[in-house]
Image 1 (cartoon, rainbow, N blue to C red):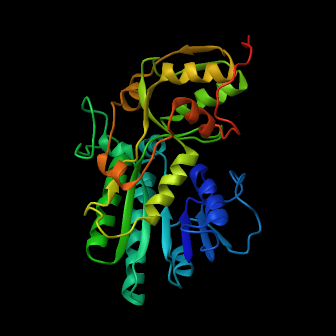
Image 2: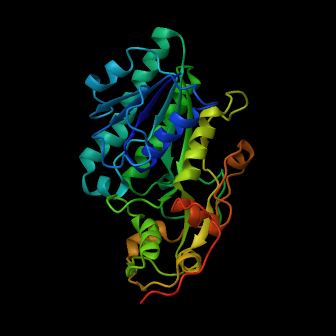
Image 3: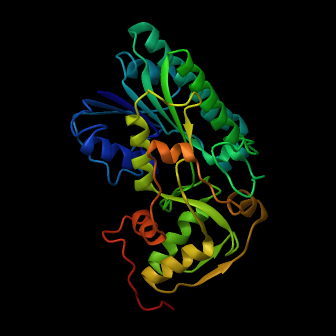
Length: 332
C-alpha cells in the first residue's frame, strides 16, 4: 500500500508517520511505501523513526507540480492531507493563506482525481478539516446538524476543502473522509500561528512548574483532544468501509468539553500547583473559549472516540506512561 502524508513533519504528522510505520493502517506491514511531504524536515522529528526504507521525504510545497508529479507518478492508495497554514497566521497573511489552504488543497485533490481517471482506482483521502468551520457564533449545544458558518479564512478554507472532496467522491474520482478536528494538545513550544496555543501552553507550564498568564478566563470552555487520540481517529477514518457512509463524508469526532479551570485542576492533581494568572483577550476567548457541548451522533456511531476522562486526557496529551493522577508537592 502506497500512502501519502502531507504536513508529515508537523506535530500531528510526525506521530501519524510513526504509527503508520509501526502498525500500518489495517495491520502491521501493510504500508509498503510512505511518501512524506512538508516544507522542511527535522524540526519535529522526535517519535518518527529515521532510516526506514519505506519512507520517501520530499521537502517543498505539497501543491507544486514539481512535488506532486513525482509523488503521483505511481498510484497512491491512501492520502492523509494534514498540511495547512494555521488560522491566526492565515489571517495576518491572507494571500499566502489562500494559496496554501485553499488553492493548494484543491490542486492536490484535482491531481489525485486525475490519478483515478488514469488508473481506474480512487485514492482514499483523509482530510484534516477543523472545527473552525463553525465560526464563533455557536448555539447552546452542537451536533451533526449544526450549520458551518466560518468567521475566519482558515475555517472557510477548510469548509471549501470538505465540499470539494465530497464532490470528487460523488463523482467516483476520490474516496474522501473529512474530520473536523479541535485544537490538539499538547503542541510543542515552537508551534506558532495557532490562536488556540494556550490550550497546549497550560499543559507544558504545569508540567514544568513554570508561571503562565492565560489569555482566556478560568470559565472558558473548549474542545480537547490529545495527539494520540487524534491519530486514532485519523486512522479509523482511513479504515472505514465506503458502504453506508453519508454523502457529506464529514464527521466531528467526539471531544472532551471542559473548562480551563477543570483542566488546571486536573494538572494540579497530577503535577502540583504552579503559578497561574489570567489576562483574557476578547478575540481568543470569543473564538476558542466559548465552545458549547458537542455531540456528533454520526461520528459516535461510526466509531470515533474521545480521550475518555480528564485525567486520561492529561496523560495522553503529555504522552505519560501512566494516566493515573499523582500528587507532587506545590512549586513556588
